[in-house]
Image 1 (cartoon, one colour):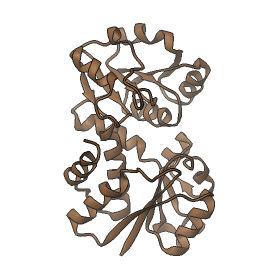
Image 2: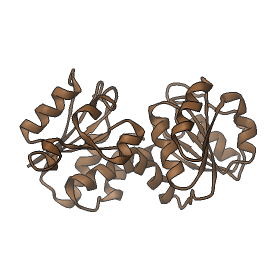
Image 3: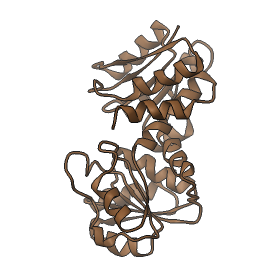
Image 4: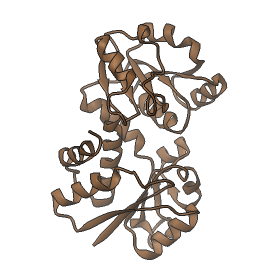
Length: 271
């Protein structure tokens, strides 16, 4: 039996186990997905290798710490964070170090592709410049979008924009004007998770937008409800969660992930 898992703190309410195990069941793969809350990322990676763990997902607060203990691919190195570790290289290449990947980028791009949204040549406005914001901004830019990053602390938006192709940084006060000519709006903050509030004034939304919200609980945030009311197309955050997991599943198993089964399992725990 192969064992995969998730390290982070906290991970008790993670939706990754039912999502991944639904995939194993659908493809009749003899595997389990478990969660760990280690105190140290390096020790966790070393222990996982010694125990023969096949793969790990990584979440807060270890996404950056893990970089020092893996061989990161180009995407993980650019973003400065790892959310997927593959142990198949241990003992063979990379000096015995596992490889580190960031499947959040694939999660964003596949979310838009699943909704038949071609990002090439679009203008995107992104709210937030934190950890999730880095992955989302790179995903949008890599797909061909010009990205306007807006953040409460404008200097953080400028810092992120300096790393991302075709990106500019702004303070939040610029958002209404930026949205007037935008094709895509992405919320990369946690606003809307705990309260029925939106990071964007509803009056700034319009029917020519595609609105993506990284928040997945609730599935329909205030931002998405306001966007739908304005006639915009919407993409909820559960799609990013699903497709980043799909990318990890496919890397680890070498099999095409059963997306419908994994999506059904995920949403059954959200609705």
